Structure formats: C-alpha cells, structure tokens
Length: 371
Image (cartoon, rainbow, N blue to C red; front, side, top):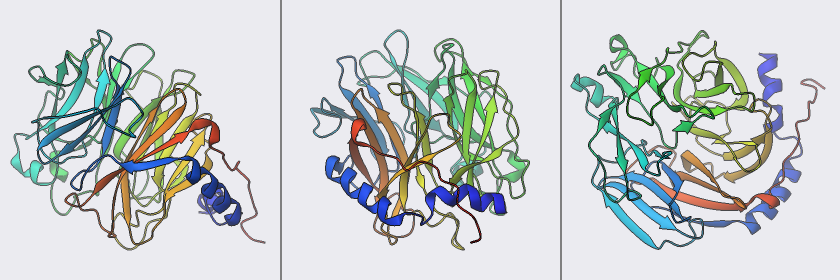
C-alpha cells in the first residue's frame, strides 16, 4: 500500500498553487465549445480526405458526423448515418486505400447480454468519407458479451489493425456479476479489416480484478501497451510483444482512478503519450467520483507528468474522453453533465483545443510519505 500512495504523489496537493496558476494560463489560451447537444457519451475523430477533421459520436438517431476545417471551432458540414442508438462505441479508422472503417454494435444471440450492455461487433466501410456505408463484416465469430468504447481503433507500424475489447464470459453475465468480472484483449486484422482474429484474453491476476474498457498504444520499441479501468483504485496496464495477440500480467499504472472512463493516445507529431482521465480514488458510490477530469503526458507511457485539470466541479460528472492531434493543436472531447451520476440522456460532449506549444507539465517529484 505504501507503494500505491507514493505512485499517486504527483497528482495530490503538493504545489497546489502552482497547479492553479499553470491551469489559469493554459485555460486562457484554449478554445472551449460543445460538440453535441445532450444525449451523447463519447466521440472519435479522423482526418478527412480534404484535410478537414471529421468528428463522430453516437446519438439516439444514429451516428452523427461533423466536419470542420478549424479543429472543431466551427462546422461546415453535418450528417447522420442511421446506425444504432446512443452508445460509447464511436470508432473510425482511415484505411490504406483511403476508405473509412467504422465499428457497429449488434444484438447478440443471448438477448440477456444486450440488457447488460454487451454486444457483438461488426465493421462497415465507406468510400465517401462517411456519407454511405458498405454491408457489415463480423468482428467476433462467436456471439457473446463484448464491450467496445470510443476512439479505440489502432493501426500498428506493421499495418495490423487492433480493436481492444472487454469480454465477459456467459457464466458471469448476470446482475450478481455485472461489472465485477471483465477480461481484456484484442481482435486483430492483417487485411484491412476484411477478416478478424481473436487474441488471448487477459484475466485479472490481482484481487478484485476486473479489467475493462481497454485501449492500446504502440511504444517506440514496437511493444503494444494496453491500459484498462479496474476496481483497484488505479488504471492498470499490460504489455504485448506479439502485436496485440497476447499480453503479460496486468500491473498498476501511476494514474489513480475510481474505475471510471479514460483515454490514452500517442501524439504522432511529438511522440509523447497523453492521458485524459478522472483523477481520483474510488468512493463508496460505484464508479465515482468522476471529477476532476485531468490531462497528463508521458515520454514512455509509464511515468506520467501532470498537465492540468480540464474540469473540476465536484458536483458534475465527466467521462469517455477522446484525443485527436494536429500538427499544432491537441483536441480533447469528453461528456459532462451537471449531476454526480452518469446519464446518457443528459450527457453533452465538450470540446477543448490547446496549442501544444503552450502546454506545461509539472515534472514528477517524489516526496516523503511521512514527514
């Protein structure tokens, strides 16, 4: 336990005034707006063929697409593809031949799974930047209880495409086990999403071990790092040396978490890793609190430097963030609502834009646990 507390030191109250001063400067330089009306969970973004940014999120009417030439400050085009309902599954990836690939959530054979939010998944393809879509192709061959969050798709340097997914075996799909058991792993494709293989599922070795809502990044050495939310008070990670097919035993990261949504992504321009997450220990309320939502940066995906609190009202609720990088700017989206509880009916997507040259970090400083 002492190690856990020392890990969390960078994000506690040390130099609190310095944090506030830095945050104020950075907030004055940023743009803040809204990506959605109420009724959304999480978004994703991809570069359009003409250099614009296409944002996408899921709502009750389907997949909402918005196109912007100024990183989301204004929108020049908007359209809806009638797929599904309000869900955290908002994922797009640009393929080598210029098409877009999007993941879709489908009802599994066992309808009980759907009641708990579990799904089967398929992919569709678009030749016209998301205006029309192809027929669906299956991702998982066997129907089951799978969970896929927003902005999760990753292409490796090898060309392989990874879809990190949480899986719950049938025997644990019930009210007694709901959100207490979860395995994490990847489906992977080596032929541009036409066919998918199932990797080996990572089962938690730690006590209280739920490994949920995974996301993956590729390190400079070619290893794949998977990050997961857990019930253990921190985000956990595991490493793959075979392109996401298998992962080592999970380990705690430096990022404390109340089993809440998060994102981690590698900035292709600077080579740095960025995390956006709810920086707090768990409370007696399930998966809470979800405030403050913060940003941190890392050179290796292991040691993290605090940047800022993005939002910190203790009576509000923040989650399902996404990151998108341009040459000069970092774009962050996440839902918020003015209650302490997750509610997809009132969640609204915020959008913030930062000039990367104006961001500052507080370097990690170890301080004595007892003085």
